[in-house]
Length: 174
Image 1 (cartoon, rainbow, N blue to C red):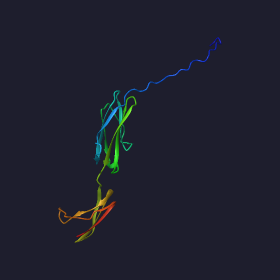
Image 2 (tube, rainbow, N blue to C red):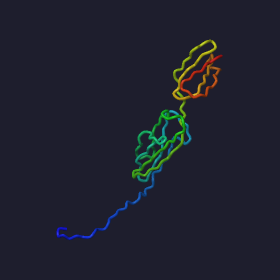
Image 3 (cartoon, rainbow, N blue to C red):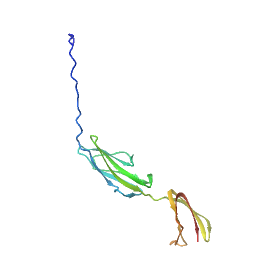
Image 4 (cartoon, one colour):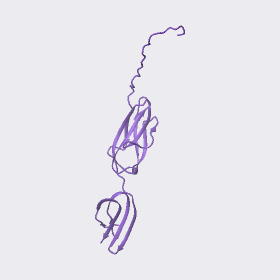
C-alpha cells in the first residue's frame, strides 16, 4: 500500500464448473426404415426432443453431411436425399441431434441404395433378315441381355452376359 506495508502471499483461489446434468436429447430416425432398399429421391426424417430445447439435427450418409443442419423446435426434422448421388451398395444413414446446451445424441439405420441403370444410345447395326447387333450404354456397370422378336410380345431373349460393363453389345441371331 502507500504506507509501505507488505502482506504475505494470498490464498490460492479455485473455481469448479458444475457438470452438465441435463440429459442428452432423444433422437430416432423415422424414415427410411432399417434395411430398406432406396431408389431415386427419398425423404430422410427423424424425431428429436430435449428437455432444454433442440438446436439442430444434422443428417449424414456414411459420416458425410447430407445438406445443412436442420434447425427448429422440432420434434420432426427432415431432408431430401437424391440417392442417385450414392453408389448402389449398403450405406449408414444417421441423424445427429444437438440440444440448446450442447448435448448430442445419434440414431442410425442401415440401408441399401439400389438405383436401376439408365440406358441410353441404343442402336442396331449389321441388320439382316436373321441377325442384328444391338449396342447401348448405361450410367453404371450392368449385365447385358436383350429381349426381342417380330411382335410387341417379343418372344426371344439373348443369353445373359453377366460381365458388368457400361458399354454393351449383343449379337442377335435367329
